[in-house]
Length: 271
Image 1: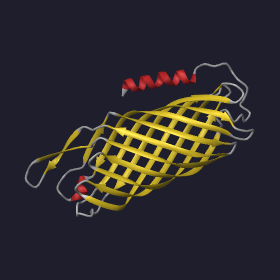
Image 2 (image 1 turned 90 degrees about the vertical axis):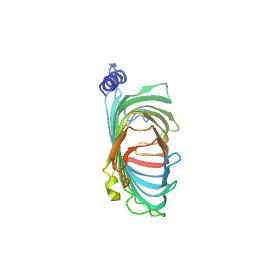
Image 3 (image 1 turned 135 degrees about the vertical axis):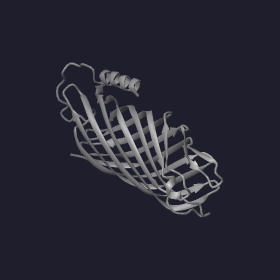
Image 4 (image 1 turned 45 degrees about the vertical axis):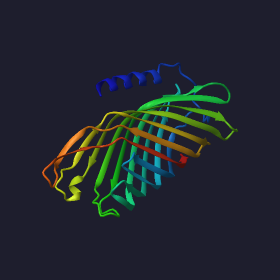
């Protein structure tokens, strides 16, 4: 983590740079716009542990952001996302479960700079830090009578991305964004104590993975809307001891390799 922090600090310095003062953006829509934003989103969600289980379904959520810009065209942005869905669970060997509550909360802070490329195009690279929290409530019984439990997930990552803005008219720009999410570490808590089988809760650490994001937003002075995609691929975690089974055998738990794909539509209002 210490080496990651040094690399991130160096990249932040490179993005911000020391640039000669420029005139204020004067609401040039090709540049990152300052202010508050609130909005909503709907999405389709799929989480899978290959050959083990999957969770999928529809979600709805809230998004908010605050952006600050300065005359050097450097900007800072803070984002918040809250999302909820009732998902369908399916597992190899343990059956199915309907209407599984699933929450996602995400906060991010990024710094970047706008680079006008001509009269109708601007480039806006950025880098920052992100935290993603997920809560999944599988308590109860599956269709085969298997006992479920609560799961908590924490991801820490560095988003590195770029937004291009193309002028579509005097009042609208088209803004595609591509992003790579550099996975720093993950922590998974599985409340196996919920099962009543005598196991302790499993706390697994993850240190290998990656993420990607893409969006295509249509932006005006006050409004933004468009489709987006989030993807994660996380490798096997470490292995932890959780107790003994009914036959007295030591039991160990690993959070298996998994991937998540979510895509949807989002709208925002800026003020």
